[in-house]
Image (tube, rainbow, N blue to C red; front, side):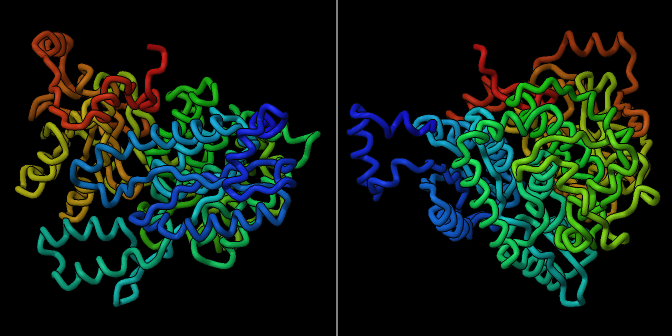
Length: 562
C-alpha cells in the first residue's frame, strides 16, 4: 500500500507514534488509509450539512475495514459572491482547492480517496487535485436542492430570484412578490436546483465514470442520498483492499480521453452550464488529454439536446430529471443516435459505461425527450469564432431565448459594476450588444460571473432583443444570448478591448460566428493605439493569480513552466 511509506518499518516508529495520537491502534496499521476530502463550509447551502455527510461516510469506511482521515478544502458560494468584488475570488478558489487535495494526499501518502464536493468551483478543483494524486478515488456530491415554489405554486429557483431584481427595477413585480421569491427560491440544503454549474459538474462526474449513478440528481438530505454516500464509501474500501486489482482503478485509468469526451457529449445532451467548458478544459489538461476547444463543436454536431432544465426551461429541475430516469437514462437514449456517441470506458463502480447504463430507460418523455423528439438536433453549447474571438467564445445555446442570428450596436462597459449601473440607468436598448470587458481571468482578475447583468436584462424584458458578450463568464443560471469566455481577453490585447460604442457586432450561433464589422485597416489602427487597462489590486493572492493565469481558451489554468 502507498501508506506503507508512513507506517511500515522500524524507522517509521515516530510516524506511527503521531498516528497513535490520533487514535489509531495496532491493527489499524495493516488497513488502507482513506482520505476523506470534505468541502464542508457553513455559508454555502450545498455544503453546510457536509460535516454530517462525512460522519456517515467515515462510519461506513471503518465498518468496511479501512481507516478514514478527513480533511477539508475551502469553498466559495458564487451566488453570495455575485455582483461585488467577492466574485473575483471564485474561480481562483478552484486552484487553491486542487492544490490542497494534492498537498494533503501526497504529504501523508494516503491509499485512496473519497471526495465530497457539491457546488461551483469546488467540484472541478477537487477533480483536478485528485488527478494529480492519481489514487483510486470515488466522488460523491452533497446532492441537489429541491426546487422552490411561490405562494401561487409556480416552481422557482435561484435564477428566478436574480431575475426578480430586474423585474422589480422595471416595476413589473411588487416588493411583496420579490420577498415571496426571495424566501422560497432556495427551500433546502443542496446545490441550486437547476442545471447550473454545480449540478452540471455533478452530472458530468457520472458521465466520466468517477461517481456512482444518481450523483447528479438524487436530492440532498434524503434517505436515498444517504444510501449513495454509503455505497460510495463501501466502493472505495472494496477497491483499496483489492491488492490484485486496485491499481486498475487509479484515477488516470478512468478519467482518460474517453471520459473527457463522454463528459462533453452528456453536457451537450443536457444543456449544461457554459462554465463546464472552462472546467472540463482544465480537467483535460490535468489528465494529459489533448482536447481542444474546437473539438466541442464537433461533438455538438453529433449530439441531440434531449434534456432541458432550468434556467433553460424554468419548470424542470434536477429532481424531475431524477424521477424521469436520471443521467443514466439520458446516456442510454444518447446511444440510440449511434453507438459511438459515447465511448465505452471503465467506471469507478467496476462496470464499463455501457454495462452501467444497459438497463436504464426514460420514465417520463416530457422531461427527458427521446432522440426522435429532441429539443435540438445539436448540443446545448457552442464555441464561436471570428475576429472578435480568435481563440473562441462560449455560448449556452440551450439558454437562448431570442434569435440565433443577431446583429447590433456595441454598448461597452469596462467591468461588471459599470455594466450593472448602465443597464439600470437605461443605457441598454433593444437591438444592442452589451460588451463587458476586463473581466477575464487576467483582467478581472478572476473572471467574474455575469449573472447580475444578464438577470437584469431578462428581468427588464430585454432578454429576446439584447445580446451580451464578455471576456468574463456566466453563472449556470444565466439564460439569453449571452456569450462568454471571449479570448483573447481585453487585458491581453484582445479585440474585445478595442471595441467602441456603436461598433456593429454580428453573432450567428449556427455558423459559429462572433465578429465585429470593422475593416483590417481600422483594427490595425486601434491595436497600435491600444494600452490594456490594468485594474489596481489590494490582494496579494489575486496579484499572484493574475501573474500566472492563462486565458479561458485553455481553461484558465495556472502556468507551471516558469
